[in-house]
Structures are given as C-alpha cells and as structure tokens.
Length: 98
Image (cartoon, rainbow, N blue to C red; front, side, top):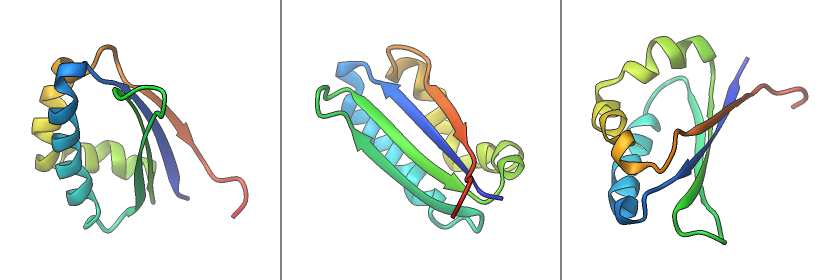
C-alpha cells in the first residue's frame, strides 16, 4: 500500500536558494526510482521561507531502508541543520479510499 509524507520546512532566509537547489537535485533523482509515485513542493504564500513537500511512495519500509540511504540524498541530509530554522515537521498518511 502506498504512503504519503507531508513534510514542512521553515528555511533560514539566507539559505533559501541553497535549500531549493539541493532539494531540486533530490527530487529529480527520486523521480527515476521504481517505488516513487509523486512529489510536489509547495510554497507558503504568506512566507518566502516556508515550504511543504507532498511525497508519495509505494512502500514505507522501502523508504526507510532503501530510499533514505541513496547517495544522492547525502548532501541534502548533511545540509539540513544549516538550512532550517527548526526540525522538519514530518507526518505520514495512508490512503483510505482511492
């Protein structure tokens, strides 16, 4: 069963360009993964530095044990402490009907 992650980011204003650049590289690489369904990055119209990523994958265990370990994610994960004002807010959603 597929799983969707809703991830909210509060980005350090001076790091906005770097945040978007690093995330775009990850999103592009993810799109070629066989278990990937979709991802859409949203910007908060009230704040230039607040973003929400909606990301759907085929399997939660695959995300935890395979996808999060992909080499293309390393620079992104290492940069997060410098990029963000606070920890990401991550929630996990499962489909009920569809």
